Length: 101
Image (cartoon, rainbow, N blue to C red):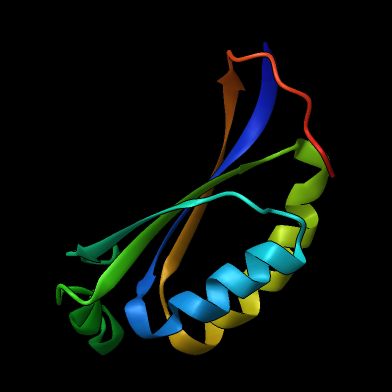
């Protein structure tokens, strides 16, 4: 079993290609995307009204702990400029695989 980082991102679908490119540039080559997600932010601002529409995507990806700084460095500017949210947590991978970096 390995401890890995789980990255969960909710972003407007228009920004999805930017997020996926950022993950790729960070060395994260696998991900899952769920489209047409409704979301409401924790802060009630005009930006959050946009997130309530069904034109959002939920991205989930996993990486090794040493990769997370690169991921955050690539994702944060996009979220700061265009909105959205990202959560990172520690999870345990139970499948025994070699990670190729």
